[in-house]
Length: 142
Picture 1 (cartoon, rainbow, N blue to C red):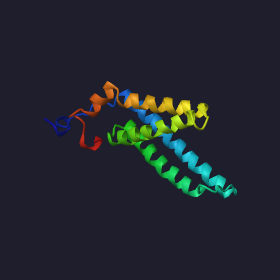
Picture 2: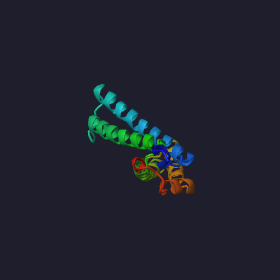
Picture 3: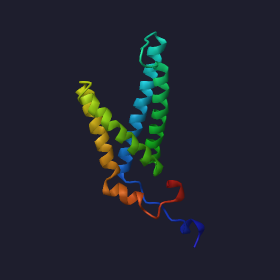
Picture 4: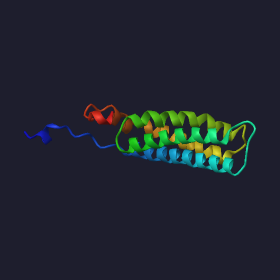
């Protein structure tokens, strides 16, 4: 038996996790775009009394990079991306609710809420869970 035959092949990443990873990655890119918008607004002279545009930009950049990395990792079969993606969706649900109710921006809140619920459904789909629990995954997928 050759050494290549003794190495167990990891099962392919299910499409449910790949789609979840893609959506999560898009959310990360949106976070980076928001960070850029905050920097441009602050540099153009738009100052708010209650918040710092640069501080908010740093926050969105850090979160955006982390969520983007989690989404890319999940599409490539790395299990750690699921935790970041799941936390992002859980944090987006109250944001969607606030946009739908108190902020009066249902055209923004509805897509955010639908996307968050869809990603959570994909992350907890039976195919996703069986792949995540597979013993045949290589150590670098964990």
